[in-house]
Image (tube, rainbow, N blue to C red; front, side, top):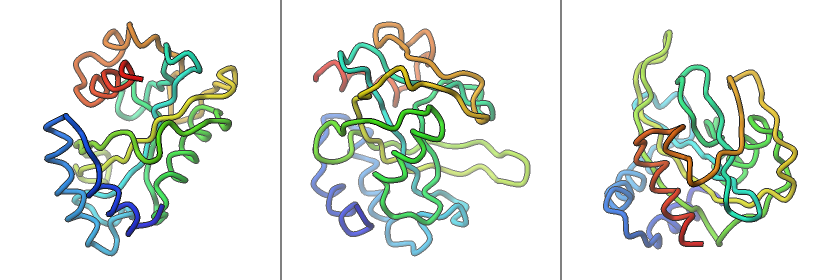
Amino acid sequence: MNRSSLRAAIKEYKTSYVDERMYMSRFLDLLFFDNCFERSLQSGHITASAWVLTPDHKQVALLHHKKLNRWLQPGGHADGDENVHRVALKELEEETGISEVQLIGNSFFDLDIHTIPSHKEVPEHEHFDIRFAFIANNPTQLKKNNESNEVAWIAIGNLEEFVGNDASVIRMKEKTLLF
């Protein structure tokens, strides 16, 4: 998936969620910036993440992010790589140890734009997150890296205990329940 195929996939994306429909035009506008896949675009840039389920779809892999002090799905910066699917897989393996997955569907699973607070010399900015859904072939691979306090399989039914009312994570939970 490169910039032009991502643009086409966003244009074709169908969602019943109003917030995602509103994000679509902002993503398309951002993709006109040459450096939209780079952190150097300080107002906001493309990121990619992985919503990874156990084979029975009853648990999702989340990590407790050190800097943000929140439970999140694995993901991160594209750092110039326009292939956001590859970025999501790379971040998944780096942050959880999970390397053997199957993509659910034919394209991305969810779109989100969220604000990242300022940290040290990095000003507040937005992450334009392309999210892919996967099934973990070997859920026992789970291990944390130095960016996380913890990584765990969280029961879909108990998700709110970890993420509170984070609308974007709850939206992915709702979509998961439709599988």
